[in-house]
Image (tube, rainbow, N blue to C red; front, side, top):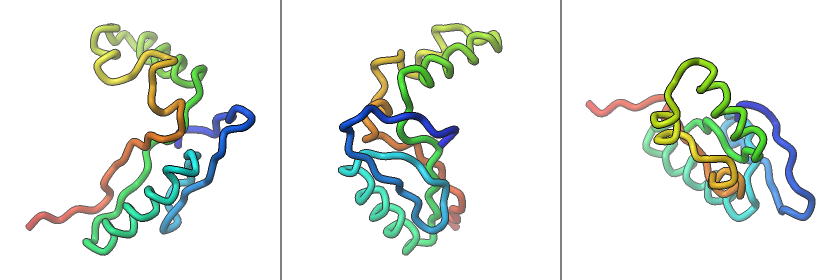
Length: 105
C-alpha cells in the first residue's frame, strides 16, 4: 500500500502480508481470499504483489489532485482512478495487484 490510511471505527479489518510481501489493510472478508490467491499463484511460480488495498476518501482525492497537478487531463485520470466516494478501495474489499515474476515460455 502507498501509505497507512485510517479505518473508520467498527469496520472489521485485517492485515494481509503473505510471503513477506507489502502489508496492506483489507476487510476481513477479503484478507483470507487474498492469502489463498497468493498461495495458489505461488504454486505456479507466480509472485503476486499488492499495489494498493484500503484507501480513504481523502487519499483517493489526493491521488486525483497529484495527477491533475502533474498536468494530466481529468478525462484521462477518471479512466484510471475512481472519483472519491466511488472507489471500491474505500470498502477494503479491493486490491490492486502486480505480478512480480512471470515466465510464459
